Length: 218
Length: 240
Image 1: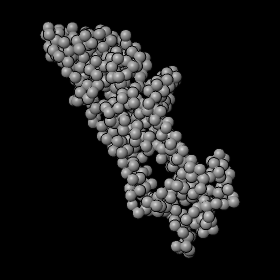
Image 2 (image 1 turned 60 degrees about the vertical axis):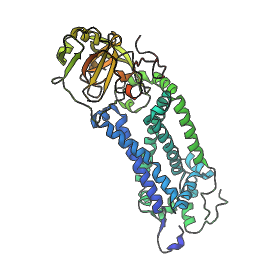
Image 3 (image 1 turned 45 degrees about the vertical axis):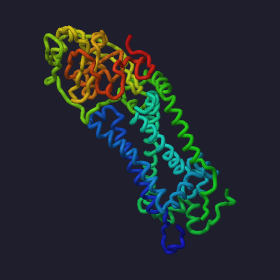
Image 4 (image 1 turned 60 degrees about the horizontal axis):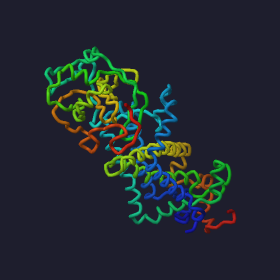
């Protein structure tokens, strides 16, 4: 995690293998749910694809698997590193709010490991997962619930799914538009130059310049 | 190691908790919110040439359900409707023969027990009453069993329910022949009841001396699935 490990290395480690495994395993489950959900939801596609029972089984299985990587992330020795990422994603500085309000035009020098857009994405996904799990479970095991909850759960599941499509599409588009960022999540490493441009505070921190949390800039 | 990101407001947690709160409200009151939204958006979605409203959850549109792995396929050429059981003259009809019988046109809502409703659907078909009269129901017959050619789905109706003028074997809906995904070439439309009573891919009608619960009724749905008066729901009736 510190730059002293390899001073000659021109790259920073951005994501540990455990973090990347968590990201990609969760992404695989969510994408499977998104594709199968789309098939189940759009009538003409349902008819075109057929095999509705199989598609539904895949959808439900992938959905129930979503929390498994998260649980594993909290069970292993990599727990501390993961918790730290969550903490960094959850905390917003005044600069983050300004950055988001100005769509990344201002306060760019104060962006830390995650910018406010990435933090917003993470918070949405963190809320989306339990929402979809609970509403989906009510839809699947509807016998155990009052009948009107089934309609309510369908309502929540539909609208949250629509929002998830929008947010995840945005997440993927941002990643494709910034190969340096995507490379970070694929290989775990980013170039110092990339870090200095996109996440300057984190780059300074990695280089050992900023040791303290408090800064007169804020 | 402290870092620039550790301090600050826990906005992430607030977003998460806010979403969970909204979700709980949505599960409990979603039924009412959904029907309100559908009333507002139905005029738009019904005349949507782009088809984009297919993706919007409020749109009062059909959702395609089936209980088997694959949707069955029968064409106008090989389709046969069979009527048998406690009748004097069991018979089979081709699609053309069914369409040659006196048609009944209905314009009524379709209400699913899971909550969605499609307003003012146009249906054309032959009343079960006409089919039963053609077969000649024997004394002691009190009910119907209905079978789908998907091989799994079944339904039930009492004789009184089946003889209503708004209960038809439909071969047209939504301005065209009943499509495969909607249960074509021939499906049931039981106007006053929830959608699960309107069996798709109608294969066979069997007249019996007792009600045998159908597929969903064995899984807990009410046998007499009147809209607004069964399954713990209070939707507006679809047919008087």
